[in-house]
Amino acid sequence: MSTGAAEGLVITGIGELTTADDAEMVEGPAALVCAGDGTVAWVGRQGDLPRQAGTARVDVGGRAVIPGFVDSHTHLVFAGHRASEWNARMAGRPYRAGGIRTTVDATRAASDAELLHNAQGLADEALRSGTTTLEIKSGYGLDVAHEERILAVAAAISDERTFLGAHVVPAELAGHPDEYVELVCGPMLDRCAPHARWIDVFCDRGAFDEDQSRAVLAAGRAAGLGLRVHANQLEEGPGVRLGVELGAASVDHCTHLSDADIEALAGSGTSRGSPHGATVATLLPAAEFSTRSSYPDARRLLDAGVTVALASDCNPGSSFTTSMPLVIALAVREMHMTLDEALWAATAGGAAALRRPDLGRLVPGCRADLVVLEAPTALWLGYRPGVDLVRTVVRGGHLVAGGWP
Ligand SMILES: [Zn+2]
Image (cartoon, rainbow, N blue to C red):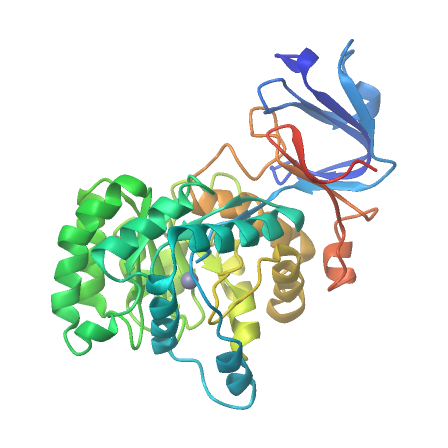
């Protein structure tokens, strides 16, 4: 198997190779071949490596290699910060959806250049911690012009862009949510849809109810966008079941779930074998960590056969981190996922949540996005919390952060 590989890169000396595919793990010494087109051409035991005359070789000295993280839920384009709100929350004030409006004011006041500078800085930070794919949502503009320009700024960073005009009702329309939903579904969607692949709605207490959320998702689908839902973060509600009913790619947060919610998710499609097409439950434990809230019941979802993804929810209010290694450590320590389950959820699971079968796995044909860890095994992602273990980040077969060992 050598399709174009002669121009690519051969990585040898891999102590443990996590593919996030059915086969899961290739024990070392393993090797991986990137094709000249930036995809994975071959993975396997080093002794079985096909002859690749003329290709560049790198020996990673027994270190573990994993797929690059696919962070399928971020709010990366905004201005300002809310450190004092966080500080007050740590002193006992609960998190409320309305804090979003503080960031809306700062974002509206910022220039395009400032917004791009901030977002690019966060994207670079994420890349250095191993994130090779980022989804980015709008939602801090909340009027036609600002939502559109947030998505235009995000276009410089990622192809996976989500129109989240229905984040909260803006201050100028407080008390008139139906009027705002009409704006979101009409002129705002018209201007934003060309810049986005997805539409999302915050269906929860203090945000949008079931009818309003349904209207937003239906309008988005009619405009050709795929569906995502912020659901069941603050309390049990209709969001998860609505997402499943409408065929959303992902319902995100899933912190407060009823038996009916779990059943709906489990019935939406198959799990790890072929997750694309199912409604993925995307868990965001850094949000619970940062708001000192109880964590989603990941075990209940996994044991019911639901496809689970992990993402950062990077935003200035409830989860100001880009670190997928932190998210994985939290998922293992606080949500009782195994390291293997958490790593799958942060890579192939995130790709399933974005319906991108070309990402998140190290198998032939997938994009060659990978991380070399400063560790002999990926278990260290949970075993050594808070330590930067990301040595090398490769995207599309090219070194993009860190350096070769
Ligand atoms: Zn979010």
